[in-house]
Length: 107
Ligand SMILES: N=c1c2ncn([C@@H]3O[C@H](COP(=O)(O)OP(=O)(O)OP(=O)(O)O)[C@@H](O)[C@H]3O)c2ncn1[C@@H]1O[C@H](COP(=O)(O)O)[C@@H](O)[C@H]1O
Image (cartoon, rainbow, N blue to C red; front, side, top):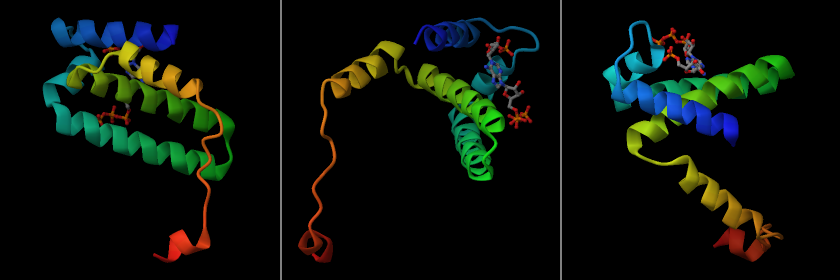
């Protein structure tokens, strides 16, 4: 989470203070639609890389996706602590597999 927090802080600073040549500033200038479009695009690239079985490419695409998700979180005002809290709550819970009955599926 430290790397994520560090990246989040940089993105927050970019939103507050314009910086020449900053891709993050460019995203904030373009707005939410552009940021969300990039999240979708990067998500598709993760899927294709994973399908192709190249772990190095997949890891790189995951980093692109994480970065764009962090920019989206800053834009929306969702803190890293908020996400961390939910993950921590879920970590306490085990046996999450929902039981499946054929009769449930047919209704
Ligand atoms: N982690 C990243 C990061 N990951 C990906 N990218 C950029 O995301 C872009 C995605 O590439 P694409 O080809 O999909 O997009 P594009 O064609 O360049 O642009 P558009 O499609 O959005 O118009 C590239 O320009 C990457 O450089 C990132 N840009 C910035 N960061 C972090 O943000 C920090 C601040 O960066 P700046 O805001 O540029 O100073 C950096 O130090 C990094 O830590």
